[in-house]
Image 1 (tube, rainbow over the protein chains, first blue to last red):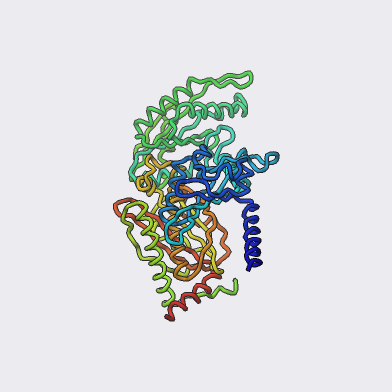
Image 2: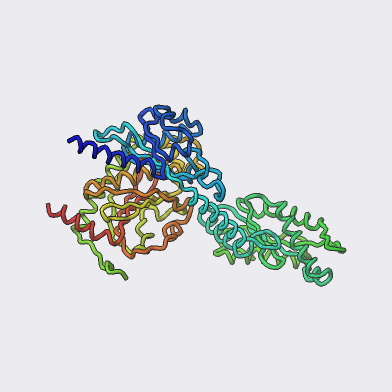
Length: 321
Length: 206
């Protein structure tokens, strides 16, 4: 009998050693959020010995824990007797521990996933909860870096190199979206197309790099004048397209005229030469007669053509003929 | 194709799955109702054996929404493995925020909290309900955020599926008086269906 209990004790002891050495944090809290169990992982990372934290209130011992947030999660576990999970995406960590790899790791802190499990529920009342702390720093860092790279790739794939505006492909996508939204919600949206007058002349007279400078200058003027909600893209060589959401053709014309005047007043300096140029613009407001994005663009193009015919350096609003 | 490509379920088995889901989702709804103090409208769970690439069609409850947010959580027990998917219509978030008493406007990080809170309750309770009836204790993996404010197709197509068939149980939860619409899907792996069928047959014999 005595042998048996000493075997049991040995067995229990080895189980405890397993728990102690798990590379996962284990904490048990009672109903008042006092710490009841604190394994080796927690001790190592916090620098606090189990006897130092035993029966101490969690939020007093670790003021960095957002009490309201954690209670919200833990009360669910106490009251409903279900598990709760939190991920590093919600909050990077529960316990602010240093990164396990201080030399080669790039994260300052240990990212943690947390599982909260109900304990002592044999009679259906949860008297304690167990917290399991997983170190997910590598996963989190990789995910964050991957996302940053993907975001950058996405940005590059949408951007026109020379001007920094959206490229034609992405602008067209935006136009499709805005067209559908306009159809569905009946929201007023105007489309502005414009290009540089006598651009061939600029290229022939001052050279192509100077032409590029004019294209860039036009984009800069555009960015300086546009609102945050406007969507501007480089449509073609010296052609620009812009979506003005929640804007009638008349209001779009006020914007367009101001931009046209700014461009006409600006001077392009390229190496030794300086020159000025103008732009011609066309506006089409979305209406029920326009059945596709292509028709919408055509309408604005048509108005742009009228501006060219009418002597350039002007803005024309599309009218159905 | 794998050797289990011809898995199937009989009408009786389907009824039994539906009954099991009914009980489980009732328990989950009860927990949610207790936590929130609201009335949860109980739908009829939809049980289907579908091709995994038809998953999109199984999400009938939220097909009309423009963008969605979702989390998934793997589970396994007694050789029965699968994933739970919880998908929210993005228009639900303001009402959920009111319900969970977080207050304030739901920004992206608050929405994630809400998503995880509801996922914890619904997935945990449903799995426990199903597990109790089938006498299986399910271990749950850590939940993974599938995406926030993404197109539904992107959300469910992002994965490279290894299974061809899945037993899908769809539960579309609504809450009375609130504009909240979420779909809980329990998807059982192809090789789990046989085990499940055996368990269900055992229940059917009684």
